[in-house]
Amino acid sequence: KNEVEQSPQNLTAQEGEFITINCSYSVGISALHWLQQHPGGGIVSLFMLSSGKKKHGRLIATINIQEKHSSLHITASHPRDSAVYICAVGLIYGGSQGNLIFGKGTKLSVKP
Amino acid sequence: NAGVTQTPKFQVLKTGQSMTLQCAQDMNHNSMYWYRQDPGMGLRLIYYSASEGTTDKGEVPNGYNVSRLNKREFSLRLESAAPSQTSVYFCASMRRLTGDTEAFFGQGTRLTVV
Image 1 (cartoon, chains in turn yellow, brown):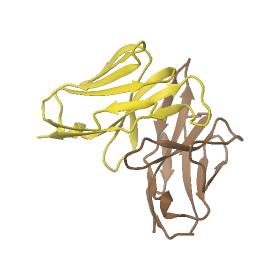
Image 2 (tube, rainbow over the protein chains, first blue to last red; image 1 turned 90 degrees about the vertical axis):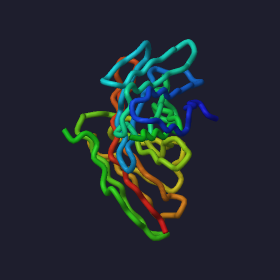
Image 3 (cartoon, rainbow over the protein chains, first blue to last red; image 1 turned 30 degrees about the vertical axis):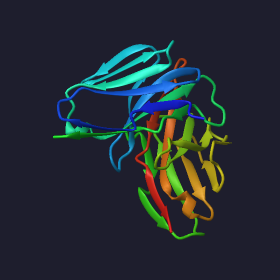
């Protein structure tokens, strides 16, 4: 059961490139989260969105509720953006999985 | 504000040893969670606590116990560690907004069982 699918699994980019990471889900959700995890580091929440689009600096997150799809875009990528990006969906009702179901993550490496 | 604090950051155990992972949050959240993260897999829920005094099993609870000591603290105990429990463990606390859930994670505990 892969209720949250991310693509690609791995992504290598050159500094300055525009990057897109995709997330598709198959369950009813209350919100979708984009998280960032640096190598050996903790997990930081980037965005939580339930409709439309959000922007923070060079990061943009969009969601299409009808298509059950979200994208995370990074403009003018930089080596410090190298991290694992995780998509997680908030369930309307919890249960044994709690409130969030996580994708497997997209490992991004930005080369100088 | 510290947010979510986990200790220790790293630990090596021998098979059969026990240990407790500590987690504390200073945001007055009701809900707290323990996840494990393994290569090639998404975070999987071990146990969660919807409020002080309550705990529930998640997706992968076998081999673990938890205690919600008070509203701030939620600990995870391995009674008899096994190599299969080698993983990175994350504690999280969450706040229910109107229909949404805001999540805050600790720095993780990297556990190796040999």
